[in-house]
Length: 229
Figure 1 (cartoon, rainbow, N blue to C red):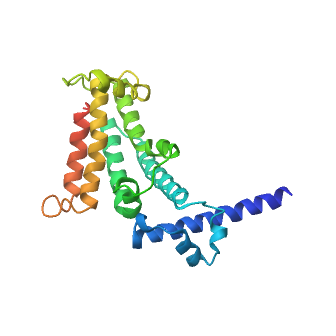
Figure 2: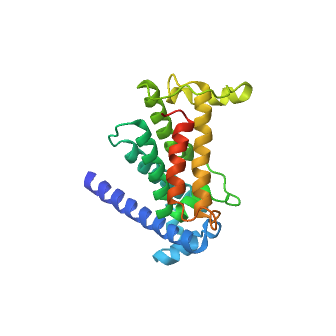
Figure 3: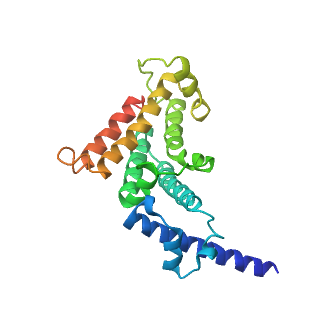
């Protein structure tokens, strides 16, 4: 009985992976807006009613793809951060490079999570934790730099009011780091993905294209911006 259940679970996992792989191919050819469970079932030779037992709706499948993309991106950032570096600045630069490299290698999945909103789709709470993996890596590096004495006490504006309350959410992930530095961390997080989006979506053509040197220099300057000397 136990072996039978394990076999069924394995078969279900394999078919789930096949469905998601077919969905990713659709993303490449048609985009997320056109994702169709019926088209996937035809490609895989399944009746649509069988596929709906795995993903009851298009939105359920989209959510699975989004979580997978966030997790893959987060894993790339974490692998880079977990190497041994002589200085936290080197870890920071490595994470920046890993995030960009993943995006360049997985353009359609990047577009799924950081591109245009998908009409009629509302991301559920289950996507929040996977989406936080990259900023948490950067916060961890910032916290380590502070603990080890590598973080400069920069003369930066102190957040107040509602902004201070929002920044306070970050304090548990980088204990002891001043609020003003955590605010800069939030700025850098948005800058990172803005820069990658500019590159992937053609906004750097005619200026910083190819973007290798621009990106490398930006990663160094953003480390300094958050105080990692």
